[in-house]
Image (cartoon, rainbow, N blue to C red; front, top):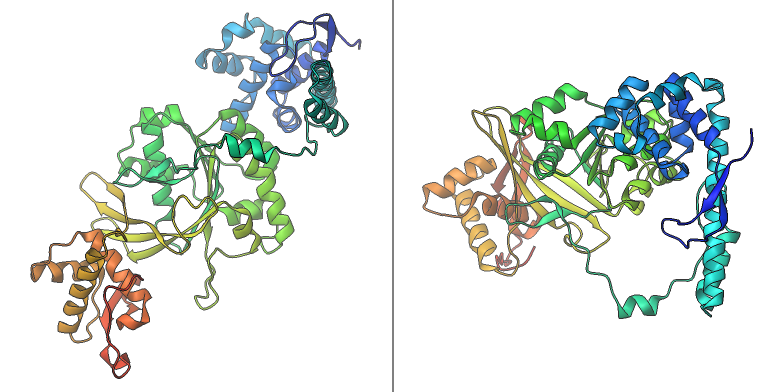
Length: 507
């Protein structure tokens, strides 16, 4: 098989070197695509080894993207389905005649040699990258740009055979200081006050006890994004499509918005690198992993092994954050409350590697016909843009209606106005004292405050009760009642002699 070559007159993202030949092998590109059209296993192999940019001919790159989309959706791959995907996505004009797909399938030498064809395509792509770097090195040297020439030289020396540049380069910190990037601000999953809690391009973990509402909360994130026209990918290792469908119906999400902007995937035993490549091609704003424990188990990763967990996160999640997708993985806390720390079960390295960690703490259980609430707490914020460690990012209310469920994220109490929590906490103490040690759920606490004419917002009462419960000097204790309800009571016997409770204290 001869190596084809065509004059290179332009190159995306690099220097055009007119008259030079760009390495490529169209026969290998066509053969690997033909194998994909003949065998799903061949398609999986090709997607694991190649990226769309590895193809020299744009039409071949578009066909490969269509194959990847069908593979991730579990749709059969053949000339008819690929042609339909190209038409639906508006890319058929680039490919041209749909008969090309049948020709690729018929003329494929052997579906079993898909990996060999892919290796040839990848080798040519690496050589093109080498030529690009060499051209830029020459241009930098010609212009007297010694730093640029050095960087391109290092890039050439460290070019890996599976992808582009991975060279060790010294960063110009002074230049970054003179032209700083804007501060990181959360943009996804918004509260009622407009502030968001998830940063684009970040790796997040949401942990909590079973039935705390973790999947429901992220279903609300799906609702917000697909209605706004942004792509969401859900990697479901746990629940199944019917449960997600029912929840989106309850939240009132239009089916058309889901069809256009939500991609639901059951990765099963697929290699994490394959899953990552397919999701990257979809260019999502948000990727949800439900759940991290099962994702690790299905990949054969020991969740207690720090090294294995870190490698898994690097392979599956970091390629997604590199394209500015926010990744949120659902995790479970350990069963033993005495040994429970800031994070979910398993390796502690999960907390070290993620950018933001949240815990969802159930306050009032919810079900159909019964409203509930939870607290979204920050356990780690690498950016420092969401809130301090162990502070509350949002109070979450689950309100059932005739039509389904409404989930609202509300801002926690404003610490800049200390009279609000002070007045509310004093009123809560007053009510609990009147009840003489009787435990009150948050719902009953709200009703009792209404009965004595206190007009605090429900979210203010919930937050104030939680702050009192977290501070031993408040003398408010919490016990678990029926259906895991949190019951608040005032226990004066715990008061040290001569000690007063200061409600202006910031908890």
